[in-house]
Amino acid sequence: MARRLVALSKSFWGEKIILLSPLLRNMHKIVTVDMEKDILSANRDLAEQNKALLEEHGIRSFDFLGAIGSGKTLIIEKLVERLKAKGMRCAAIAGDVSGDDDYRRFVSHKIPAVNVSTGKECHLDAHLIDHALEELPLHELDYLFIENVGNLVCPVDFPLGSHTRVVVISVTEGDDMVRKHPAIFAFSDVIVINKIDLAEAMQVDPGILDRDAMSANPGAKIVMMDARHEKGVDELILALGL
Amino acid sequence: MHEFSVMSQIVSSVIEEARSRNASKVERVTLELGEFMMLGHAQLKFAFEVLSKDSLLDGAMLDLRTVKGEIECGCGFKGEASPREDSLHQLTSAFECPKCGELAKVTGGRDCIIRDISMVVPDV
Image (cartoon, rainbow over all chains, first blue to last red; front, top):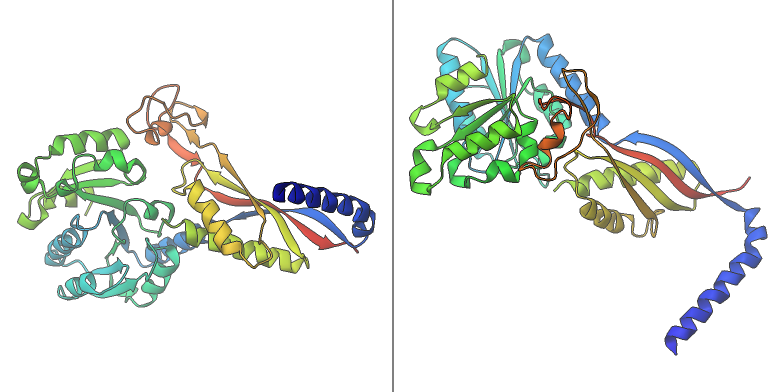
């Protein structure tokens, strides 16, 4: 019964609208407006501006992406140590949802660093980097390392303006990591497979990760690392052209 | 994961446009999404519903359209990307040139564009 009433009232209102429509037409109309607004273009434009600003100062920049706990911070620390020993001037931007643990690790190497807490966001964006660059002594730098929020999905859609994108995974995440997140590997320049010293304990074959990475991005340079014990650091330096 | 923040940008852009035209209601939003974007349709629709509540967009329809990815290969091929069904990496197999099999450059399918909006405006 209730259903029938609803149906009746629907048709009643339908007729009402039809009856009233000539009147309504004089007051309101429905228009379709072309917007053609690219939602991500603002980020892309800012990323280009960041890149131009870095280039103006002769700075080469690297954006490190990767899973949580894959070793991004330690790898950047190792690179900074080597580059500092060669007399190069480095800086780092630490991106995290909250906390300043990574930032403090960078500062302990006596390099300029900026902590970027995204709060709720799952990725850094070009706007956050733009502000972080304001806090760095750009005229005194040769290299900039940007560590993105630990995440293998979202950073893909948000270029930051860096010259080279590096994605870091470790054997402790399992041998299916590349197959689960192919896009981030396809859109990166260098792929690091870290913690290979733990491969046996984890019963993971790093060869599978290597094969999948190669298949996801045949153009990428793939580097096997055990950053904790300095293995693969030279290979990474070579791959990054440092 | 960032569907909500992307959608809040979309909703505010649409509201801004609707206000500038004195619209009383937005009926439909057409959104074009590149095939290679890391944005889920179901999550976008959910975020749209939540964010449009009690605004000019309340009850509006979100018309989500997928735009095919485009690739350009060194061999000269230029056109639509075509992921292989049998591929291990369905997404990345779309980057392979269908002509020579080499990895091609992605030239389209990474955009998120508000194509048009239908709204109720005063007829003057």
